[in-house]
Image (cartoon, rainbow, N blue to C red):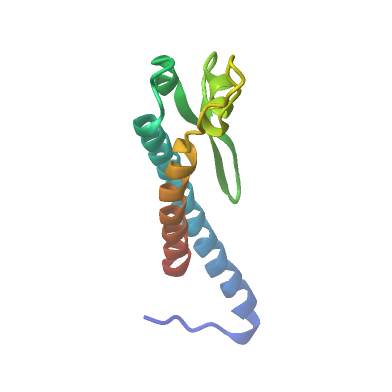
Length: 129
């Protein structure tokens, strides 16, 4: 049921509704961000190479880096001591005999699956409030 508002109170009513909308969307986006970070970790653990060191997959993780009024920021990372391998696996590296190893785009592939879904979910959350 529509609520009537006097013209002099219209600005305050709009501000209250926008505040409620902002809070709802922010909470939904925080949940979607956390879910996307967990999905990225799950997909990279499933597709990461394990031929060099089995602990590399086990050390893939994510964490909340910061949380503010407009949402939270999550970071994907590899725990010590295997974090050094990530760049070498993703981009390839030189071998002892002068050759190069093939790059393994496991991270880019996982991002390619997770990011479009995340973007669509965020658009839906903004649209539906």
